[in-house]
Amino acid sequence: METTTTAPSYASPDRLRRTEDPAAIWAPLAKLTEAAAAEAGSGQVAITRGFDRNSRRRARALRDLLAERDVTAVELTPAPGSDQLVGDEVVAVVNLIGAGSWQPYRVAAQLRAPVLTPNPVEGTADQVERDVIAVSGEESGKRDVALSHVALRSEDPSTGRITVEHDGGELSIAGGWLTATAQDQQLVVQVGGIELAEQELRTSRLRVQAFDAQHRLVRDELPIADFEGTLVLATEASGLRVRPV
Image (cartoon, rainbow, N blue to C red; front, side):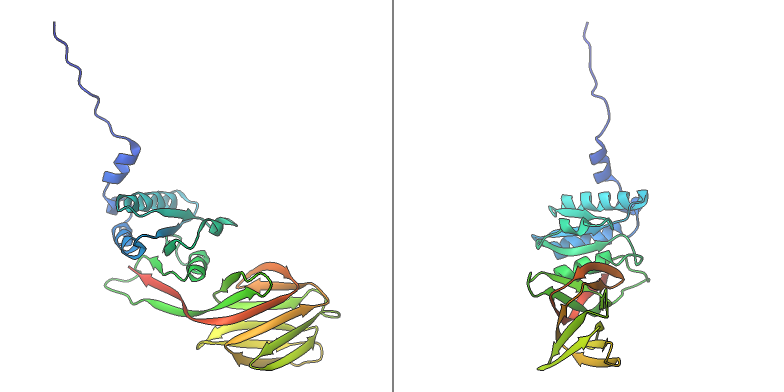
């Protein structure tokens, strides 16, 4: 008696994901995949996503679609320290979080890479460019980026002091504080102190030293350090590029 064995009809979850229509998962996936693959070349893509199920599913599908094009991708979340996963090989950032988080934009500005985001309108939309503030520790040389502002405040204004240098001039300010924003390729700096009424400075580069007390350094809305030392602030024209696709 002859017997015939028929192989079971099944496919691995990975294969099912690869053959699934991207539009069935999320309409913008196909265009985001094509744009990210075109931008990446031989580099990597960072996919920024949230923690919810839909965001995880979209990120996984995008990563698989990019892998089919031989593009490697790393997933980032808003969790503290997640951006430490990216390196200089990342040349594009895909924003799956939406406008509710600054992380995709900050990561992209740090890497000098474009942010690819779903087109919010029908038809084509132009790339948006914004100046950003480069924040560098003079001692460490490490570069950070602020999208909206940088602020420096003394923890104890009665003893703290800052020195502000720009365009060949210098201010030494007891109990000093400052806030810097980027506008028209310049830093717009509000500065004041115990014996100095608030005034405005405009420059492309500024060096600030903090003495005699711990100072709180704030980048955008996030306190990032208790600071005592020297910082260099500078504008980077069109440092943030957001490309709807």
